[in-house]
Length: 171
Image (cartoon, rainbow, N blue to C red):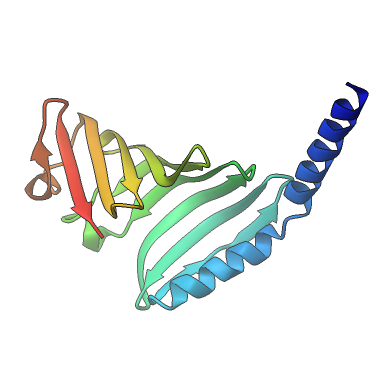
């Protein structure tokens, strides 16, 4: 029994040290490099690391040199078996208001090793509440607009379901 306890303590210490010492900033810069290949550029005012997270403040998103969105705060948190990306106060550019909702107060993307091929999406904004799932194995996206308000610009792309409006696509 003593051996099991020592093994568990060593395992927890290794796990904790990996999380704390993980190069989170370098991960973010690698993400920026990959986005640049698709002509997407992120310009942040401040980058700060926590023990388990990376926080970005005042992020401006450019696509092909055009400012398309600003995000007040981005938080990336990982525990190795569970990761989440949270965006707070996402504001789309006025030129896109006919295609997408302009304001999103909170967007949460989460991934767990219990379902490694799925990313779960939760959002609230000017459109109401939205939940969804990105299936990486089947390359499909399904977003359910449960409490929909002000989604007129999206209705041509949505389908009516028993739960409400649904957006489905593949990539």
